[in-house]
Length: 305
Image (cartoon, rainbow, N blue to C red; front, side):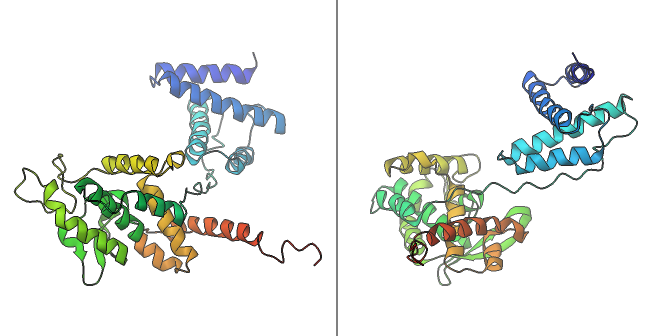
């Protein structure tokens, strides 16, 4: 067993005895640190005690270029930083080379997006209907795809947040930030149909201020229940393989808006994002689709030109 292996064993013992870390946590740390050690040994022929900040930075960069999830990436970076914090506090190294290193940002993975035809399939499978539960579901889907609001914002809407004349909704979002979002005629029709049968969901309550009331402790339909209903109707529409969630409807709204020529800043305001960089992830989807579309252009396929 090498000196580095012994150090890793010492670290594992500390995780168990001092931090009472679970077996899964210890296993994850060990996997991450072993991968890091292999990188340092092969690329630099160094012990983990002799590395410089630049060596660790290169490891972080190599991770950011790998096709791993954002959560996995952040965990691996955290594993190495915690490991070097331990080495320093135990006097095994004179300074912590990982302390001042800023982790390179890994882009959020490009979100799943439905095509317009796939969304239409879902809507077609549940309309026209006379069942109150299905009428409510259609209203939820139409509002979400028409506004792109977050699922919790949607299910907790107050009844007086809808402005029918201006076709807009007053939304109180993350951090208490308020915004007004417009919606289209399809959503308007679905909302009006739902309002006509809304009393069905008030049940034993004398009244409710929520747009989508429920007998649950919050007083409104839970986001989890909406997700379940959406998944069920997706299966009926033959789209079970896509694992459709309310969040995917939000992504689809944003992507289709950009594809149609919407301004990025306007989209940022509609979605309720504080930082425009969060919205820019959707431009990657649009750009990728443009590249694919170009392959079908007649001039691109004409080998004589």
